[in-house]
Image (cartoon, rainbow, N blue to C red; front, side):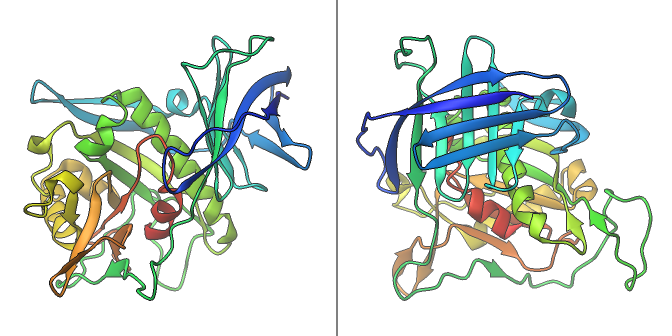
Length: 339
């Protein structure tokens, strides 16, 4: 069993984002190691402790999942082993924590520590006197409706649904017979603005979505009949506008990166239908770093952080989308909510 201790130093940082509150600099430390299971204990101050557990049997990806991107405008597709992608992913159901932990040249921890707390390495910061790496511990605001307006984060397509069988289970179930556990397979598409935040590094994008989906699965632990465990069936990392003709930008608002989300999702669905993975995935989900917007009268509003067609998984409208800030895990709540 591996124990990880983090000391909170009394070092305040200025807030770099209006929705974030800094807590300080922390230094992870490995305390104990055993072979079978893993546990990390993280102490943030004298009144708060956090145990992070990870099981080698946890599943985030399909056995071999597709990673798709482009190089010099040429498509590149290859398969990644789930075992490799999940190796450093840890979780704690009690505290709703989902993190990536590595120990190649010192311990590094990155991810979600409950509803609001996030942690990430500070690669340019100096190590402490014991050689431990510095990390930034910060708090984000939970997305909520702005003012008196409650944004509609779901809608209905205009066509009749065409339901197909999920390939997560080979057995067909009558309508009255529901399996005790289901494994919806989600194909994730990262738009070019989101991918740019990772410098178009595929391994970093894969790790990020592993932590994000792991966090979503922790939320779904409250569902008991049936139990729900998401699996990522593939990831597409866009690199430019040529990879995403479905994005509907708002004219004269390019400096604010506004897109019309309803129109974008409709075009996204039509475009994804041309892909082979569309029919073999239960849900195809777009993650964008642009501002999801809609016209309300003659005013452009950006109060919606996610949107999906309700009750359309496994249908001809099996799509959804959400906003997220690259490397921040800000969209964890909206991601799991829209799915």
